[in-house]
Length: 348
Image (cartoon, rainbow, N blue to C red; front, top):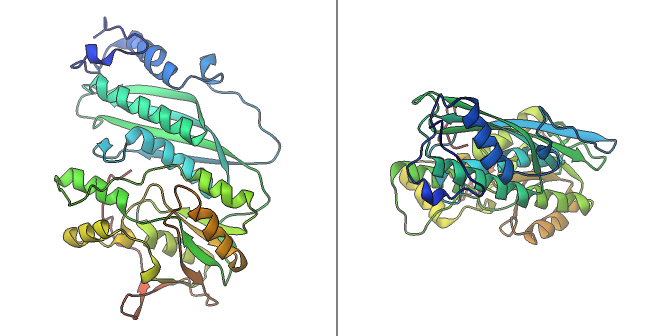
């Protein structure tokens, strides 16, 4: 493998069976960085080929977030580990009310990873970063022994700029706040489970993985009084609401009939014994906004491509018990709690 030379762009069809080898030494890493990662993510900061990125920012507040991605399988309907790594960190920044600007990426690659798979991941990640308006400005690559890395793991860290005076956090939730979601729930988790279990449904269920930063920026640019944002990843809507209720100490009440879940996703959940309220999403968030801004916020979200299925699903009450309650489809009210375990591991 030490004599394997990559060209740029990589004629991947010429190397259908080439696999990443451990022990290729510095030359292999130099080739991967110079011929694959470098051209894919090229920008003035990364092209300096320095140990880190140096950049100027306007005076004000910054947001920073980091996450690691170990999803299995690495390719799934509607996305892959590369685009997911961008979306996950960009969305975390957006939940802070920040405009995402820069990313770092660390790749842990397993010996034997097909070069075609790595190329697909890199290209997908580059496309997702461009669509999200972020630059990958520094990174690292390591190769581990066969059987020690499950193909590929990715860590991303992001930095975003906060361009407003709002403090967006669970502690800012107020009685009367309207609770909105930007679309239907549960597609990411079901898409992953379907691939793992070899399930086929009447209609294709694709992950909702996407950057929600654009939708959040529209709300902020319109002057919507946002008190809290949370992306509904592991644990889904239910876990997100419970975390916010416990942190804020406020009672949160939702109506199950208003929670948007596609019929095919609901059917798949029934077959698999899952509750869609707890199924993971990667392009969905819940927003707590001042009551007087609820209608306008809903209209703004519904005008965005990632908010066409947006809905107001509940409100914050006066009680200070930190509970989440839900009015069911039959009119009964029950308490929504955290699951003791994780319904679907390795979904991000």
